[in-house]
Length: 321
Ligand code: SF4
Ligand code: MG
Image (cartoon, rainbow, N blue to C red; front, top):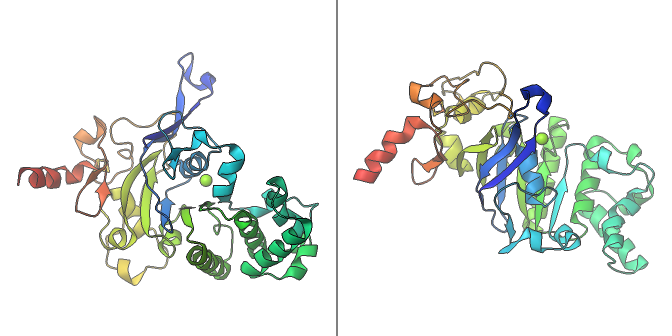
């Protein structure tokens, strides 16, 4: 609810004035059991920070995160780890190179004091098989595995404590396209078996298309459009969402006839966001009023929530009728 995460900026950059980097700037979101929310946006839009706040790795500056109706600050760190896990783009950096994969996967069980040695071994074998590896892989070290296999190990370790939510932070971005599909299918299968929820983070909108039920598009710390996946692809509203969709390299048949919007320049620094609508410096549809005050996230149809002045009249018509 209204989650904000601000970091103090290097004050040298701004003289004596205290400045904040607004990594996440007022996000509201619900994730239901068994559901996948895709979170997309360029790097620097605050997606990873949002994921880290969600699993309790970072405290929000403002707002609150509740899990099963209870504020996560009321959970013990250890208990929260049983409920929520995170997987990363580069699992290698989080896999201890000196430990066998069996020990890596067993580590959360050991830390939580779950099972006897024998029971843990059995569980590790099951987990290896669940992610498409075999128990014989348990004796090997992370360096002996390919990128896709390491991601499988990362997933096995994340599943060890049977969490209910996994934040997947760009888990397939570094993998070959053919391997990406395998990992996405694996995540989908596991979700069905365990009724898991995912927050699935990616910078490309195509990457979240396959796996998501709903998609949130983020720009400079804010969600600018939120809709069911089908609705978002059928009818995107926000100019930024449209640009993300038209940047898909091999045009999706669904998107072929759509107007192409190529954005100029890079995403501005979150330490110094533009006034008004923070997208106005790059928006092909910018109007005078966009530079003044900030639009809020509102329903434009019954289905999509969008933060953009282009649709203001649509709302006013709806309200007066
Ligand atoms: Fe573009 Fe204005 Fe809409 Fe922002 S509010 S996305 S600048 S048209
Ligand atoms: Mg990131």
